Amino acid sequence: MIPIPRADTGALGTRGRLGLGVAIAVLVVVPLVPGFVEHGTPLGLVRMPAESLVALLVLALTPWRALRWIVAALFGAFVVAAIALAAIDSGYRAAVGARFVLIDWPQLGDAYGVLVDSIGELAASAVVVAIVVVLVGTGATLAWAAMTTDAALRRRPRRGRTALATVTAAWIVAALVAVPVGGAGQVAAAASADSIGSAAARTEATLRAQADLARRISDDDFADVPSSRLLTALRGKDVLLVFVESYGKAALHGTPVSRGAVEVLREGESALADDGYEMRSAWLTSPTFGGVSWLAHATLQSGLWVDTQADYAEVLRSDRLTLSRAFRQAGWRTVGVVPSNIRAWNEGREFYGFDALYDTRNLGYRGPKFGYARVPDQYTLKRFADRELAGEHPPVMAEIDLVSSHSPWAPLPSLVEWGELERDAIFDRQIGASRNAAEVWESPATVRRFYADSIEYSLGSLFSFFEHVDDPDLVVIVLGDHQPNAIVSGEDADHDVPVHVIAKDPAVLEAIAAWGWDAGLHPDATAPVWRMDEFRDRFFDAFSAAGPR
Image: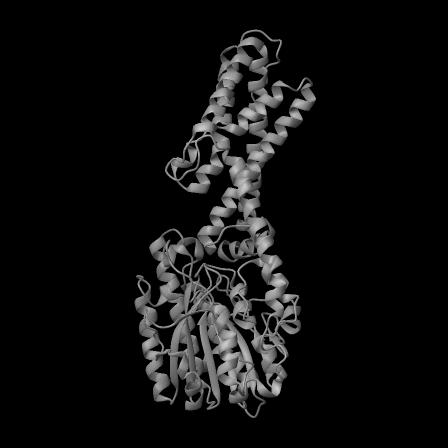
């Protein structure tokens, strides 16, 4: 490290001048990094380093060297915190199409889990360590730069005070007269303070919205409806709610990836029609984008708009009536199938009302992981069918999460004969034949191709299930949880996902005739669009005896 000159030393040598130049450059450039990250363009650098000026002013007024080190360290920590928040927010927007709020910090653990599934635990740990080292090093460098510049100013007190006062005055004038520049904010604004202030403001707005959540939870027209009046038109049916991960409008309309999925849907629709099934399709607007699937699950099941982790936690602590709990109270056996869960999920029983839960630990799969997906979708569906739908059984309501289409969409399994799914070794061969995530993510075009392949696999798995399960009382609601992230769906993509109702009994489709959904499995771009939180109440209305409204 370049030594910091003391205030009483003589003229700077070549090394000292070089060190001072580096220090000034650090103070000018590094505090502007949050603005650059925030806006994604060089316009984010069109500001004055206000944080550095404030730090130098405070240092100039601090007489004790030890206390100046503390001030410099706090300055470095402040700027580093702003850089970290700006980077997290930028990544959050790219991945899930939303802004990061401070109370959503537990989701960083989930993001790390996806990173582990993408590149492996060792590489993911190395990435985290590298980030920490860079941030700590940046903070230390900023502290050093502030102390070095302060020492230089103290060496020539009169000139130093004049220079600092002049620059500060220029900054104050700029702050008074500055105008927005190309959307990058005001030229005199403090980028680091903006980044931290923006995160705090978003958090405050989220907390205000939460204050109304208790009222929304308790405002439930169906909370006091006797179970004998709910879901009467579905008595005796096996009702499956199937979420297909990242199955968004991008898979079916307007993107280069849609052709293959549309073809799979058309072939599946033809096969289902030949087997006596009827189908209706439309669109639902998801509360999330690119990830955080559980927000969509909670929204659909509860009839509440759940678009933040804080809302999700609050809703799961409530007694809000979910679809699955309503089925349970009405006499169905309720089952949750979450194949990537690796630990007990108490909310599945306590909030959603599932009698039984299947996950990685009890589905019986012993083959390799395919990226995020610990269990291939086709295996999940076969295991569920064998355990819950074979032979004589009580009516079943299940939520089944298909996760083979979860990012990073590599490596991917492929469809096999239904009977071959009992042999885990078949997947050992498949894992070696697929490209891994690190290779796939070297090219956006390859990412999009593998996304398309993953959707085709998940839909193909579902059609394989229909082909081999003989259940005339089967009613299946298939939907996406959210759009894929922007690298696939585009920067301006909406939050709409396909939804399909599939059944053999014509009475099921007659009950939803008023919905005006498109026939078949490929909804037109002009098909009805509902918010996802509207589905629960409309479903109750369509399939229940005289409802509350």
